[in-house]
Length: 178
View 1 (cartoon, rainbow, N blue to C red):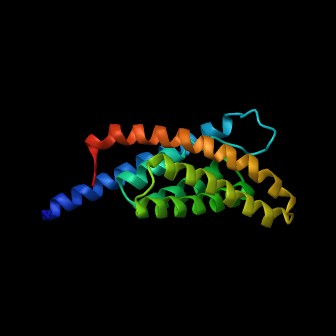
View 2 (cartoon, rainbow, N blue to C red; view 1 turned 60 degrees about the horizontal axis):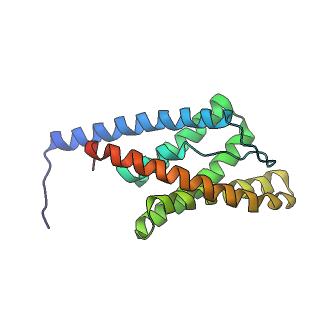
């Protein structure tokens, strides 16, 4: 195994690149979240979204790291809730987003799933997290009837997001930070 020792200036340069990449991808995730809120999916289930902000989250996870992906996800959810949402949308998003990132991190770490598989698991678990939040906030189990539709849409959109994220990652490899 080859060990490369980085000088302090190389380490600092890498940190600066990581911070810049996270800033750019946080901004993109927020823009994608806003665009996602404007897209109307013709399904009679409220709240179904494509989840295009996950392109940025998955990119951070694969290019920069786990800690940074969690931070970018929390920032995206918090800032978009403040700018474009309300406290209820925050709770739905943070519950779904945190469950999603935990599942994606675990699946990426065991290194058995492709990026598309990780994305699908993230989309599905995001929907499960939102249903959990809805059951707790609305104090009713009838919301669970939405779950099958959300699992199907989460799988479908997770595939699309995973494919796009893999294409983005391939393009960014030439700028790889790690």
